[in-house]
Image (cartoon, rainbow, N blue to C red; front, top):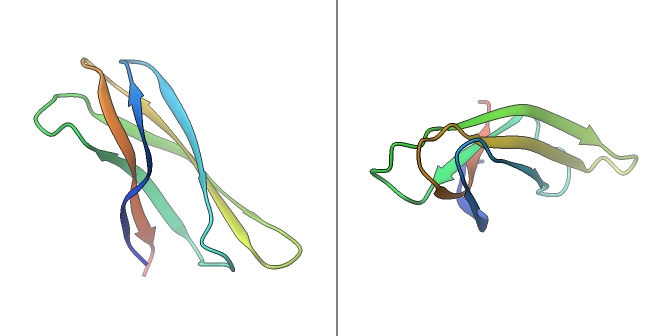
Length: 85
């Protein structure tokens, strides 16, 4: 399942990080999320790392990712990503 433009916009200055979590209900298998950068043309790459998955006793998975603005400019993002298929 692919997703784009998910979640509220977050503004990060160079070097700042945002910690995200998301869930679709149930266990969607392996999911990967990255920054859906909303300021095209700005040379501010965003690093997605610390991808994690947690499964509760009811079989619902929650996914986690940290997004860091590598600079040089301030930039807005939310999430995009999907499963491995």
